[in-house]
Image (tube, rainbow, N blue to C red; front, side, top):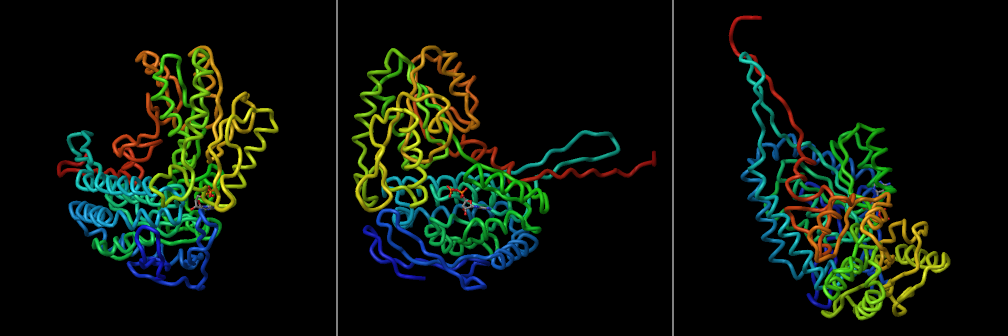
Length: 485
Ligand code: ADP
């Protein structure tokens, strides 16, 4: 460990090693890498970097546990362990949130919200542990057939940096309640909160090898996991590009099962009859929450012609009022982007937008002179062929387009290679339902944005549906005693 300090917790012990078999180990090659504070661009500390050899050790630990001790743990006990883990996380909300703000740059109030959602997610899946059921199948009178819903086995999970703890919980909740074991690789930009969390896994009483947590790079540890011959399933959240790489690696190794949660370019549609003040708050939250670093960010805004001028003036004013700055200030809404790389990518898109002839209504530049802060940015006068309209920017940048009719906006909304989320703002229930039915997206919000619950989820994560990602059906067919046919 190393002793670190945050402005709200004072000094605390930050684990920096790899968490394998409920123990802290250095990597075989003793490699380390630096973790950067995105608000100050300074090094926070160094952590152990997992190589292929460490991945092998972690996978072997997960395998041993899956075939051994974890298999004997009853469903009720799995549920109890998850409840306990949730309780410990809840007790440590302030510490977890502070570490998250330090490492990721999100505001401390938002980070506390994330921890609350982590706790809720773990409790939600704890309740499912003893409700996993099979079926009996009526085949013929001489046979008794039934299905079992079994865990998949050793699951590799690779998560991004935008919600380090929340993505961690979304992944471990459904995987552990269904009886799998895990090797989790956190994002290289944000390894710290999961390492703090690892101590709670041990404290809750999970047997060794059930949940292994390693820090490391995608090209090394991530690639080793996705092509590993003894990993039964890989779950990934991140960019579309890497999602493809992972699916290829899975296909050309052992055909492990794959689930991917990738990018978005979600349409946020505002009709003339919407409550304008409410809608502006939701549209603002839809794009600028988490500094635009959300896969479901409402980045393509469509506003009907009758309120377009009024909307754009009010939205611009609202975006300019968002407080950008120190994540540890309770009044901050927007912190820095995660890294120099992301900062450069986003600024590049902004330049592209300007060059392509879009009007930058507000923002479009750096905030301050230290840290990766970007002002909330709005582009108007955009056309569908512009890069800023087509590609995921993953930053505080949105486009506004004027539309006339419902049919026109449905076609424009669906004109995307993505299909993660969408929203519609209207007082007319008929419009809301028609548009929701016709928009191609995994989640549609009406008169709100970004409101997730464990029950409904986003894409195919969360909810009861996520259990299917971590179970497989086995059918057993028994011939009953009787005369041979
Ligand atoms: P971003 O570009 O926003 O950082 P990525 O998709 O590259 O998003 O990263 C998401 C996660 O995927 C991180 O944990 C990262 O380490 C991991 N990753 C990156 N490249 C690979 C790869 N080739 N194989 C497996 N995992 C990877």
